[in-house]
Length: 544
Image (tube, rainbow, N blue to C red):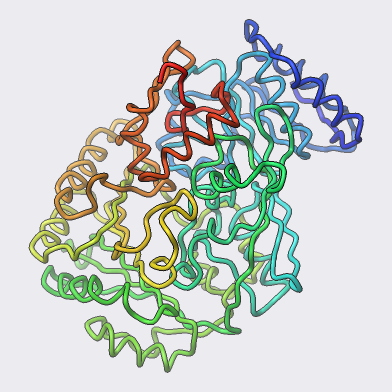
């Protein structure tokens, strides 16, 4: 079934929704057709819309829509649970209607922005397979830049590439601190923190959110003033999917120079040379001029039929190439960075560079919602490092890369320091601030469902091996690098509830003590736990 609907935006529509949500709704026996009929009755039809608002498995475009934003091939598997309906709203009223109908029919909602959730939780539910739907926000993707106030309103379905493009069209001197992958959706990026090349200067994406619009479990559209400071605090780094559906964000744009210097170099080397590079990086990357950010990645490659270790070193500097080379020679001489390996360009053009658009592509390439990197199937884990990892330990970690297929296992490191040391652990739910040298990210890729157990086992072994050398009590991890291995909630829709004690096993790893404040907010704004997933914040149970 395919039907087109025109957004209802009149005052009377808003009044209808207030009344609809003002009474308790008992979940009835569910069929997708019941849900669709409910949805159809609460939005109005318009032949002017050329795309449907929802898709069911009976529609020829269903698989195309579902798969278009799956960024991890692990979830292409036929055995992966699939939603009974995909809703692609064109207006916030469609989100309100979906929430109303989901409550009426006892249906769980998953909300997808760009589809980069590491465990697929924005479009996969393991709770109750037949009774979940996906709201795909791809059509809610507008970006409105206000150069004068140095701010922007960005809808949650926009990608980082679309945001950067819009900024670049309006200004040469403004930017925004977020990730470098252009296909990542802003909804997930902002809601979980948002780390990138500007973080050491300006903090996370979530540190630079000024306002937001969220649709809550009662179908109300709330801004910062009407939602209150506690909920506004929670959605900036605490995972908004636990509290409602954020449809739009107001962000603070930050100053950037007209040109930045960038580099992306590879060094093929034996263990000792790689150890030397990393030894130096660990001791300088978080302490250098905050205008310089240097990432490193380690993986294997095949060179003349020999498997060798490679180090990929990428960086940006807010200044010219000459100053960059001077700084790198002083702080990181082991890299041997050369002038011909560095380039000057506009800040926004650096995202073309880091996304491998290096053949004269225009900024329009940032509007492509498809990643240039084939992620295949993958499993990843993350840690925060407070003391340099001993050289012999790192050598063992590098040795483990040889156990995997060539080029398929990676160790990434992202430096801290700068602004990250100045922001309080409790300023927003993201708590990983001063005292961390860097974040480390282990990832393995593979092809074929039958290979999953082997490769997931490898990344778990690497993670376990590093236990004594990373943060502890709790062993912290980054919410945007989601990992179900660290714990999950009980299956609510099979009659289970999740105690705070159980949820704290995974919750404190992501949020430390901020987890308990998130519980308080959840209990106030969504006490029935309507917005739930395998790692959503649980409300406080009465018996607790």
